[in-house]
Image 1 (cartoon, protein in one colour):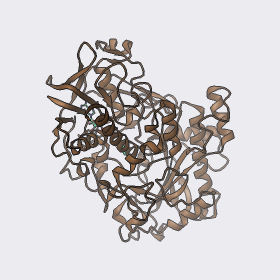
Image 2: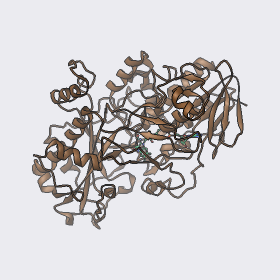
Image 3: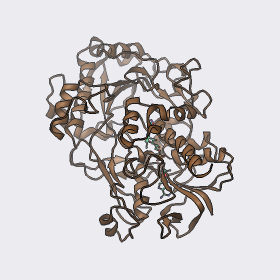
Image 4: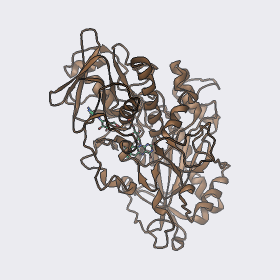
Length: 547
Ligand SMILES: Cc1cc2nc3c(=O)[nH]c(=O)nc-3n(C[C@H](O)[C@H](O)[C@H](O)COP(=O)(O)OP(=O)(O)OC[C@H]3O[C@@H](n4cnc5c(N)ncnc54)[C@H](O)[C@@H]3O)c2cc1C
């Protein structure tokens, strides 16, 4: 028996269990995680070792459906199966994003708790901000999660000033604080590595006092005739019952939360009947509205590798280089409004200048430059890590393409069918082409870029593209090479599947709290918003159920 059953011991589930227990309420809390506890694995402490977790027993090894709007092929995707969820495998980027995105979220769902100001206490509660002199209205200094900017760790990469000048040619201003809700500009990357070591959620949010079941897959939520959640059924047939007035919280991540809802009979009746699942609640938006950030890596051969500018060169090394990724800055930028408006109109017909993607300015693109060349294999490139090449990256932050998660079978251990429908809209194509052109401009049209790189490594069969590249040529490159940035959300969206209190519509005592509830894309990487969602969920639960 339990008062709170949390399904999924990833970032959100772990925070909710830990914080609820911390409140010292007389609650029996059970946290159920499908995968093992990775503590002790040789690959979880050193962030660079996380590459070994890909394709391991901890990886759900997702593959999308063939992506019709890309090159027609499935795209590989990763999901961490184990206590800590994404916190164990992610890249540590700590980005809160743009306040406008949260304010629109709150406006759309009619609930100011999800605005930037509404979430601010929870952003602050999570973090122990690295800069004690930072604005206390924006940052927390005694939360459990230590953050660190590149400069605060003492890393001084040889290309730092060059990169800053590169971007200043494009009119990108330097901003001191990456995470004050106004991210447009270039700023030091911030990570949540502590002294260069990964902070798994469960290592900073204690689970002492919580009953944690690892290696335990939840099959479905059980309901009584009044459609009130009364417990969960496990894949092995076992059950965990809920005490009267208790709550089931699903925090299984954006791919698995809709799967569990559907297996529980909450979803589209036609789809459920295809899998002989009895209908509990007709909620057709479950699994729809999947959004993810699409990104593209480009690889560049350095003109002067002998200067020791990138990883692999024997000369590349310095104090504290092991404290984070080989990156100095993150750039976030809006794009010009008129061509974007024209692109949106190709998708939707005439729109006013008040269209949400046009008013702002919004943060349409994120871009960075890394002092290493890795991952080129995904584009058929074999680039030696010998210090002779670097990487640039860009992602579209506010995609309008929407995909879906549906059931492949009624087996809860089977991967669901994931169709992100990447690059389906002209608006998304326009934003990504703008990102591509911006990076070309950086390298081909600035004095620093021309001095920095000799040429681009282009995938076999794809010509080198310079400033005069056509939309079609750029599309071909993006369609072949772009992929996930691991930020799925929206599959149990607030406003259509859950209300502002995270309650699933049409049933009682069942809530969702994880990346699934994010209704529209945010110009953030999703761990920060997910920590805040979880922190807010705890306050909501205490206020509405256990006060
Ligand atoms: C490779 C990679 C790199 C990333 N890099 C970054 C980054 O640099 N910065 C950033 O901000 N974000 C990053 N992210 C994204 C971030 O980690 C996720 O947004 C975040 O983990 C989502 O949290 P969540 O609680 O929604 O889901 P998760 O953390 O994925 O947790 C879901 C948990 O539920 C469990 N579960 C699923 N189904 C069941 C079931 N039936 N029964 C029991 N348990 C179940 C899963 O095993 C998992 O542990 C990255 C993600 C990946 C995969």
